Length: 399
Image (cartoon, rainbow, N blue to C red; front, side, top):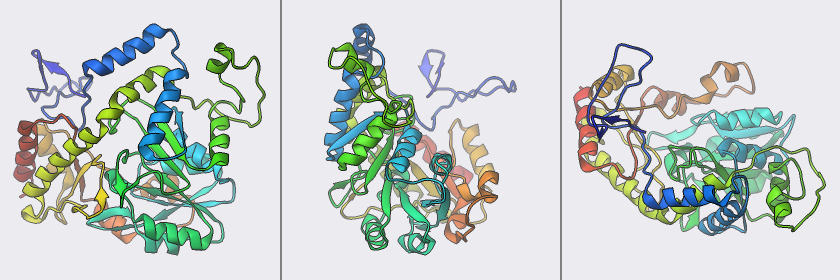
């Protein structure tokens, strides 16, 4: 999100020597647009007097299930809670192993650890495809493997047919981390709906930004029942049901959590869901401009060339810098021009906590790209001038 400078959003690259003052970016990494419809939806939820999980959460669940073409959707507090519930629902626990890509946000590995299982890190396909490699998935499987957590990196579908075939042959459950991929499809199948459970995130930088929030989707009736119970303390009814007189008491069937979503956030999701396709398409056009200008320029590569039958969500715009480039120097040049950048992600297997735990495996392709990754600004309402400013800054920085 940008700040206002002199009454204009992000028009000045302003820095200060005072470490306590954040920079104001000409082009931020991500930005949100709170249109009139969204504001009115939230205001209506506020005025309703029901702010916790209630009718808007239920409506958002139905709408999201329709988007994913699944029987069930369960709204939760955040994407990490979605992963946590999914792992528990498929029976993962102490002594189990879960295969997961290392090139990933640490939330996935943390969720695996919190249920007592061990993360087994998997390699990516290569420079052009930063999703997990099905061949390495199979190599990572052991008798202790309970599940595979795929991650649709940047909103680009994994090689799901190959992974599902491996899982089916080996009797292993597939969970989709689709935090980057609402609206993405592979051969017409929605991301999140191909495995046993799909997990989504609505953090502020996601394709449906809500501040916090998440969703799990599934076709499994028993999986849905278990996750819905676990979401709210294992209770058989929610406060809204008792408020409406549909129930007067409740039982506790499982030792659950408070992973509920509230109606205010659900109102934000409902207001944005009809615009998701157009927003994803706008992201795709910006990524196309980056690709045309930067792919091949002085050794820069842009992963995920267009693939027939695939509709990405374009959550991230990632480039690979030429081998040997000092990324921190490139980022400094961009920052001096007011362009915010990031790295998605530092590989999880390199973090101190995970270096000391679990089964160590070579991940040569992940290691090879990890120092070259650079994430550029991307959001649906990014204008042509901002895109050009990013391109100019990158071409100036990479010499």
